Image (cartoon, rainbow, N blue to C red; front, top):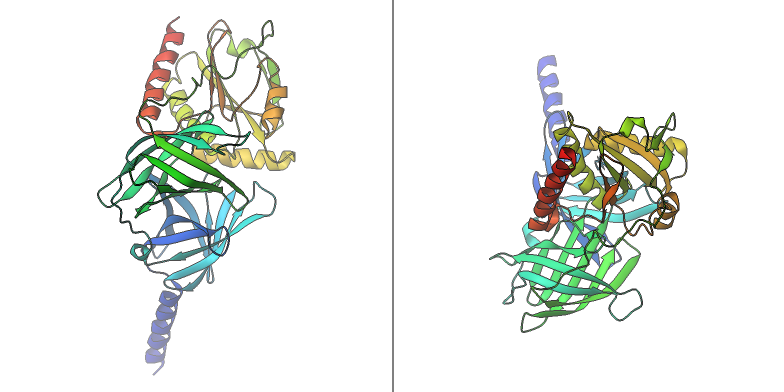
Amino acid sequence: MKKSLVLLLIVIAITSCKKKGVLEGDWYAALKINDTLEIPFVLNINESKVYWDVSVYNANETIQLDATQLKDSLFLKFPAFDSELRLKIKNRGRLEGKWYNYDKDDYTMPVYANYDINKYITSNSLENVTGQWEVHFAEGSEQEWPAIGLFDQNENDELIGTFRTETGDYRYLSGTLNDNNFSVSTFDGANAYLFTAVVKDDGESMDDGMFYSGKHYETNWIAYKNKNIELSNPESLTQLVENEKFEFTFPNYDFINETTFPSELYDNKVVIIQIFGSWCPNCMDETKYLTKLYKQHENDDFEIIGVAFEHSQDKAKITSRLTKYMEDLAVDYTILYGGNSTKESASLAFPMLDQVKAFPTTLFIDKKGQVRKIHTGFDGPGTGEIYRNYKRSTDKFINTLLEE
């Protein structure tokens, strides 16, 4: 009798655990801007006996989340960024909760996820937007800025691509084309973007475009197919101030010591200076590339110094934030703290530059201590061949400097 009772309790316990679990596979998830507008993304969930395996999919990008379950709630932390999803398991096919972005004070957005992804992510269109687009954001205003849209539409009318700007790209975008309604989005834990527009009947232009960033920002945009459109050269946007010496002293990320450049430590070495922020997705993409580059040249006369400009001004929080960033991205090169996370603050910290127009801004210095190139912004892997060309040319340039 006792043995039967024990077996019954075990069965009840297993059944109860299964009811608290969720269905495995791809989920349609969305951040709610308001009651009628949302930023969709794909959440992939797999549950083992030991841990939860949860990822966010953005086109060709997979972001592995640090997942923890506490009773009926899932806590999903993003790598690199100080951000997480907190979701309650409403039933096996429904999750509800909020996105918390701790890099911004009291910044949250409602979020939900439904298991039946095919019910939501569908496309049907006679138009095709594959190709290169000339784009104007905030069109007609004093803040108008140019961009290039790069999109590929497959046979199921699923879209992947990105927008390039003079300060960086909008990373991995994916979405749909329903009739003539264009919609792409991305969510990487730092930013949540939604782009919508109407494709004109000739398939050569888009209007009524809207760009939504998180829960507060929005602006209009228009686009025209233009295979010849180009942006300003990223190596022409920031210049050295004449007769100003390139030098600095900043505290290390842990505020225990400080680092000065130039110094004996960097004599006769090729040095890259990365002006960045741990909150910046384009900076994250560049950091991943620089980390590999640094490893590749670990036995050469080569150094990288990252100077971080952060949202917080609390030293303990800055150290904690940059420690997580370095651990998550396996950063081995030197990281310093430069100041507050504004371009104005970065420009004051580097008065020998005429401006810091974007995070990241990257300087390439030869063995004689001369600044040979300044690159504004970063076109990440979401730009495809443009990113691969940048890596090839930069690898070649570093080798050239090392051989001098």
